[in-house]
Structures are given as C-alpha cells and as structure tokens.
Amino acid sequence: MNEAEKAAAGMLYDANYDEDLLRRRDEAKLKIFKFNHTPFTDKALRSDILHSLLGSLGANITIEGPFYCDYGYHIEIGDNFYANVNLTILDGAKVTIGDNVFIAPNVGIYTAGHPLDIERRNKGLEYAHPVKIGDNVWIGAGVNILPGVTIGSGAVIGAGAVVIRDVPEDVIVAGNPARIVRKITDEDQRRYS
Image (cartoon, rainbow, N blue to C red; front, side, top):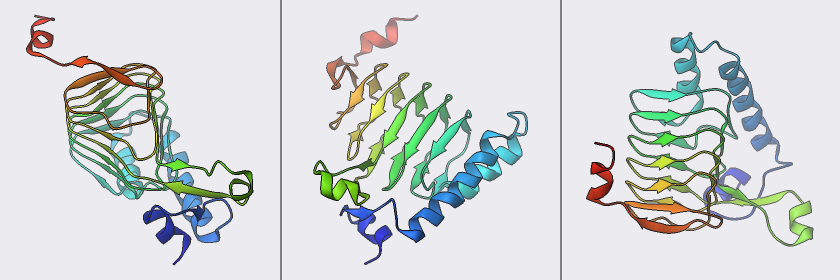
C-alpha cells in the first residue's frame, strides 16, 4: 500500500517525505500560484485553472484569491459556491462541499492531523479524515473545521468557531470548541423583512 492509499484509508501515512505525495503537492502549488496571480477579471482562465486543480466543480463557482490547498483533486464542490479571500483546504482526504455554500474570509478546512507522540510526528507521519459540508451552509469569517467533521445542510457556523465535531442540520454553532447556539427557525426568515 502506497502513502496515498494509506491516507485514503485513514491510516497514518508519510506526508512529509514521500516523493510521490511531494510531487503531487508541488503540481498543485504551481496551479494555485497561477490561480492566485491571475487577474480576477480573467474569469475564464481562473475557471480553467480551478477545473484542472479540483476534483469536481458545479456551476456558478467563485473562489476569491488567494486560495490554498494541498492536492486539489480530493476537493468536490457543488453548485452556487462562493468563497471569500484566504480559503485554505488541506485535502489529504476528501472534502465534499454541497450546493449553495458561502464561505467568509480566512476559513480553514483541515482533513490532516498529526500523532500526539513525538516519535511518529517527527517521522513526518500524519492522518487524514474526510470533511463533508452539506447544502445551504454559511461559514463565517475565521472558522476552522477540523478532520472528520460533517456539517449538516442549512447550518450556520459563527465567525471564529473551531468545529471539532459534527454539526446537525439547520442549527447555528459558534465558539471554541463550536457548540450549538440554537436551531434556525421560521422566525429567522421573518427577521429581515
């Protein structure tokens, strides 16, 4: 089993010294550099770069630069997606993002983590667990989503939250660690009318 296969299986893998994974990250970094240095007015080229980098993209996608990821091909994004500046996705494992997801500035989505013991960590070993974000999710500024988390459809993640566990559908979570603040209700729809 190679290191990429170990990562996909959720096992510890060599993310720091394995030549194949280093090559794959270098290839992604070249595309990311090109994306981040392409004028925002050249929407066709920016779209082409994203399509060559990411695993799959739906319709009506906007990612403001700068944007960063590890590999790109593990990232799947649905329709009507908007990400503001400084989105970072460490995609050692799959990151699935649904339709109608909006992400504020300075958000990190992390599938990668490291062993707590010094010996294995110093060998460059890490693990990667998938992150899944449902449809109609709003992620506030400065949010960090950690490995293995699933965010339910319709959820709102408050600015600055650190999401360490799954988030149910149709709730607001906030804080560090993120906790449920309340359920989203019909009253929220009437609030701004």
